Image (tube, rainbow over all chains, first blue to last red; front, top):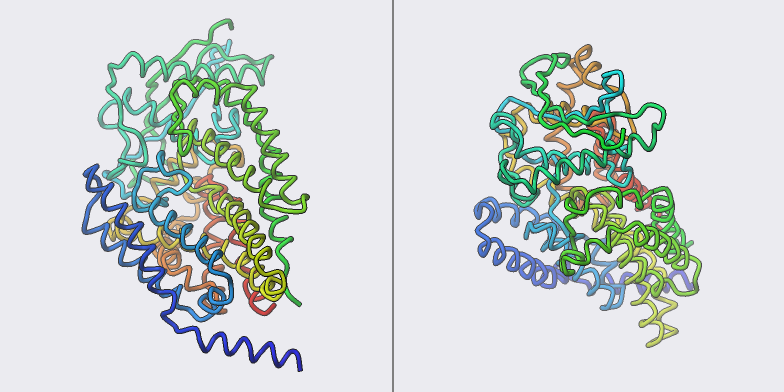
Length: 250
Length: 277
């Protein structure tokens, strides 16, 4: 009998919940997020407006339909308004962070853009970091392994950014557009930049020497490797040492 | 039988606890401070604070305080006070890590999970204080809300990603050999997890790349529509059937083990159980 009463109460709740009940609330959150993003993007003159609106429309449609799904609206109708407001604020921040595209300012609400940038040419440049031993032998260094919090290529992205200015033009980062994702590429002549790159490679070398006290390295080299994506998978890349630092005290 | 929130809290806070415990964040103090670019709330601190944030003593303190806050959040009577501290500390922690590296979406769904559980715990307490009897009747729905909102918000983020890739990358992205370029670049970044070279496998078995390339637009469309997959059986299985291998392939071909996002994705498996509770 009690179970029946619960079921009846639930049915009454769901009957009262109109399919579009939460759509106006979602619309307000969405407009707030998009309005802010549009204002910032226009102010910073960044991004392509037609593309921006197509994304807003696509995502608005998907999330709008999601909010109108029966399981979602039934659950939202059953919980207090405070909980709904928390979700609304969260959704607004997620959308704002994604569409504003200022990740360093809006973190942890940032743009999700993994694997989205088409290559500008067929040439791929990647980097290897090599230590030069006492016997002149080469050791392949793994910066991410030496600094584990920077796993998942985080350190490599930073190192690539640091190396961009010292590369020949044809080796610069090969993507259509990276603004917003990474900082501006600095002038190659900057002494400050050279100092930053040198100190970073020295830190990698020191971390390696600290972990391998019997097989220390004397220098660290950043090697740019170039390969054409039309070549077979096992093709040999062209190598070029683009930066070298000597390790002090070895 | 209704599903309770405690296992979810243990899951989210427990993953964080283990990953912070295993993470030697103090090694970042060995990197030159010049490459540190603060992000998030740290971005708004005066530039003089950078040295302080990157000091070894501060990083150790941050680690210990974060672990303590995570532990107290799940062990204490009320989650939200320690949960709020854990939210702030984890945001600072992740901000420092990204300040030395690069801002990506790794760990973020798990961080949002901590925010949401903390805020829901606070909201529960306010609701309980206003109407203790009514709260008891609401409790199962509030627990279901917590279980469903964490994967739902992650899927909304994936939907943002899917739309961005479709619109920004367009056909140019899917027709090009962008995927091959990413594999070339990523596999040569010697990482912590794998020391093998999948390009040798792809040279011997080129059909694998054909499948990967064909699966790329499919995964993107599934990402775009992913929030709609949450509640409908067949669609949910399509989503899981595409996304779980996607995480796995990312790991073996791109050297990117986003295992925290993968663990949040596993919560989608709980949706039928949560709904029927």
